[in-house]
Figure 1 (cartoon, rainbow, N blue to C red):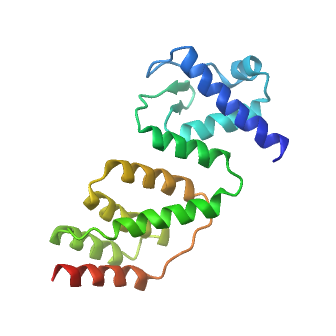
Figure 2 (figure 1 turned 90 degrees about the horizontal axis):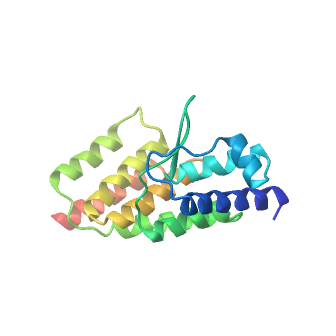
Length: 188
């Protein structure tokens, strides 16, 4: 592991510790990058990178020209654990894609799609302006919502957000039509 990654991870841990120990409440302003850099004895670039990663988790928000603020952050501990794992792993891309595919395959087992949801899926597949990534996201979002499991939905969304920045396998349209065909046969 490179020294830069170690520093970045240490800065994330230190910022999380500061948030807990200093009792930040939603809406409270965090110290500036410069102040955090001095306080944590870390380079500003490492602090900036750590803040971006923590912002991806939804813990903080950066407001242009105003600073960084602690958000109203309530979630499942499993999601926090997953997020920490994603931020720390160097070999995570492949594992993230495997885990995401497992979740997606799980929600495909839902057999309670309404006619309205089937219509939504067809509309998504017929929309030519959607990129392959957006089509995949919207398609599976219908299934996750039909599954009615908020934890799975939250974990999948987190994985989806992180994987958007990674190279992903693009599925041909036929992949989605085959899934839809199976569900139509199950319903009929």
